[in-house]
Image (cartoon, rainbow, N blue to C red; front, side, top):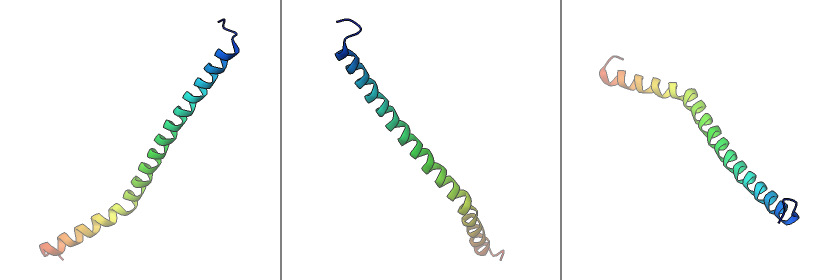
Length: 66
């Protein structure tokens, strides 16, 4: 079995492609997770101040400030 054996080269190439596909799947999943976290953070920043304002108004109302 020399280094020029076509069967061995095919096996190495196939194993390499399989490993690259697995890595790509992992990277795609991580990118999707990062994207969903960024989307949730944007929503929190966009609507979070409204929730804090409502909590502040309710608290002020309960304490008799308003």
